[in-house]
Length: 201
Ligand code: FES
Image (cartoon, rainbow, N blue to C red):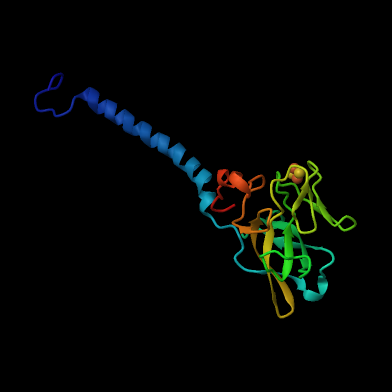
């Protein structure tokens, strides 16, 4: 082998070059892998509480107006930051002719535009977003402003006279149920295919 002493199978230069590259690779992995783990790891963590949460007795609710309740949205121990306000009312067979067939309507306060908290105004029977003027009707469908889909909802059921609220889901303009999506993700027409769901939105 040129530039090698007799009996050597690798030159000193090649040995040092290989060693330097290996050390560089280890150093890059030491910095890169933790960063990659932090970036990608949350996508595979299920932060959604998998149990139904009690939001009060049936007597607390009626079909004519919404009652605000606070539920835990993030299962991990993040204190108050993991809680959110939702609006709940009893379903009305006359008004709620959708296919969702939930005994109670539980609506998210997260605006479907960019996520600001919406507020229910009983006088107009509408949800109003203070950020960019988004307006939603009594059933959470968009009536004005920039939001691209209705407000998200939560599963509901009744047990022993108590109203329970479960998983969040998103709905399109016909109130068909979809996997939960981020704000600003469309769920109607061709646009819905440009916004596939994330595993843990
Ligand atoms: S965040 Fe609600 S309208 Fe923009």
